Length: 221
Image 1: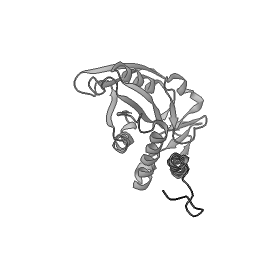
Image 2: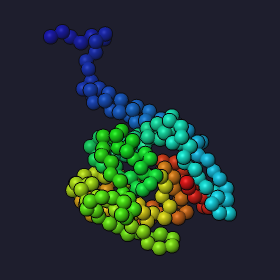
Image 3: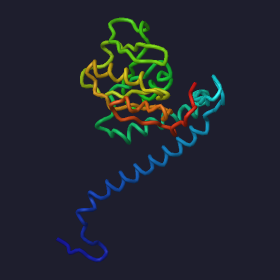
Image 4: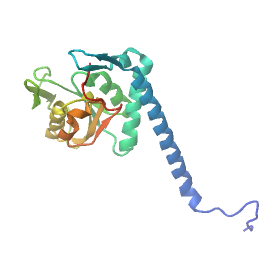
């Protein structure tokens, strides 16, 4: 066996473990930086319409994101980064559940990106075959959400997505449907949040809002 020299010092066994950890840290930092840039780009694309649909309401329009293919791609990438950073490889969702109707705009694309299935939650009477039903309260009465009974298998990990969280009633109803079918609810992801309505207080799983929370007197399209 040759002696170690100053040109070839003995290897420190810690180097073998520290190097992968350093690469992971660098990758995480890069992902966080990319996500921050994507959020800024997406937020700049939103349009605001004061006093619509009624005086005192600031209407927040997310549709420009979907009108521009590059912005649409940025949205899906931002959501993909969130899922990857939040849940890791071992806890990625098996199913993305999208709520009628805006959750259908980006839910399927996100599902493809993370290797998950997509299942819609729709208003009562719009889905064929056996369904499960949940009721939720709206401003002027009750409404009903349904999901197909075979849409989620027991034990599957599920992430619920929609464009905005306001009062949280519809999202909570969707969460109850996931649990009724035996799914494991990982959390909720929204593009925007009307935080003054405190909708997240009704939800019993982690809530993530991609863009900054909206101030009072804002609404959405």
